[in-house]
Structure formats: C-alpha cells, structure tokens
Image (cartoon, rainbow, N blue to C red; front, top):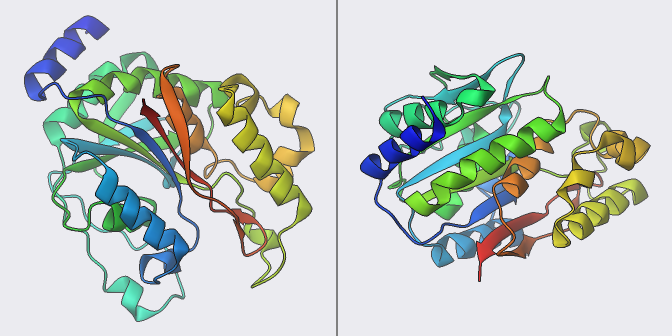
Length: 273
C-alpha cells in the first residue's frame, strides 16, 4: 500500500488536530518512577502543559530487537517490570492504558519501506515510567515501536521522518532513553565524567542547530560516542524524535544534567511556534 493510501486511512481513523509536539525523555533510573525529584516534577509539569493526544506512540530503549522492527498491537498492553533488585513499591506500579491496535496496524503500513511487522509486547518501563508522569490517569491509548539495534543510525532518523505524518492526526511521538548511558561507569552520588558532560553538550548543540546528520554519524563523534554509549539503544530514541521534527519546530529543554556520573537526564521537546 502506498503512503498516500495509508495517510487516507489514517484520516478516517483519527481526527485532524493541531500539530502535536515530539518529545524525548531521559528516563534514567527506575527510581524516578516513585521518587519526588526535579526530574519527575518536570515531567509532571510537561504533561500538564501538553495538548491531550488521541494516542501516544512510544519508542523506548527497552524494546530492542535484532533484524526486525515491530509495532505492538496489544488491545490492553501489559505493564512490564524489566528491572531487578529495586524496592517492592516499583513492582506494585500499574499503567492500565489501552492499546490502539487499528492505528498500530496503520502505522505498520505507513512504515512499509522499513518492513515493520506486528507483535504483542506491552509497555516496558521506558514507556510506562514516563507515561505515569505525563498522563497519570492512563486515559490516552498507547502503543510501542521497537528498536532494531542492527540498523545504522540514519535508518532511525528516517523512521522518525516517516512517523512525523502522525503529528497532524493527534498522535504524540515519545522517545524514551538517555543520550548518555554508560552503566559500567556509574558513580553513586559522584561527579560526572568529563566525557559524559562533553557528549551531552555535543548532542545539545547539534540538536539546537538541527545538525541531525552529525548526530547519526559515528565517525564524526568518534570514541566519545562509545564512551558515552557503549551500546546505542538508549541513544537511538533521540534520533527518531529528531527525525520526526521539522524546520518550523523550536526545541525546548525540559531537564538536563548528568546523574550518577554517566547518565544524561536531558529531555527535550520539538514543538511548532
């Protein structure tokens, strides 16, 4: 099915709406779910300021796939507890939002060039931990898109560009990860590593001037990228979000700072003026 036909189906499924923002949240530790801290407070305020979407599409660092990309078509996505050794209060959390199977399948068609398939997944903590702050009533349908970690970074930028068509149909595109994420270099309560600060600033500067090509170029970033992100699954959602923005969008920083020495808490929004 060609893109025009898919977009026509989307018009029938969803009402036209003012252009939705696209958001990247640096979610950090699962403890942010239950702690009252500057990060969780900022996410709550962001949620209060957002127009209510018809649906949320989440690209989370915690749904990694290899060789295939999937969209979750669950009618009632389960809450996934994909973390270990944390307080029982975390495992008591629920996020009972409904899914949007019809829209999810239309998104699969929209991404036909990327050979995306359907699957049953749920909501991992990269998704529901953030959504609990943004939409605490769980009253907005939500579904996830997986990250194929075998693909080049430009590929993820391209998916974001295609997904941008959803913004005019009331769909909020939400990326959840961290632009610096090196768990082997954590410092509990410690000073940020110089390379973490440097890479976080590099990302911020390139985002500000819309130089997304550089952000998707491992050679340009060199060893700094591998120090900041030994694996790329937490970085990739920021690229997808950047790809879904356009030249009329302004970028707004919601939170920033390096937590635990090696995890960037940078969160940002692209929104039309």
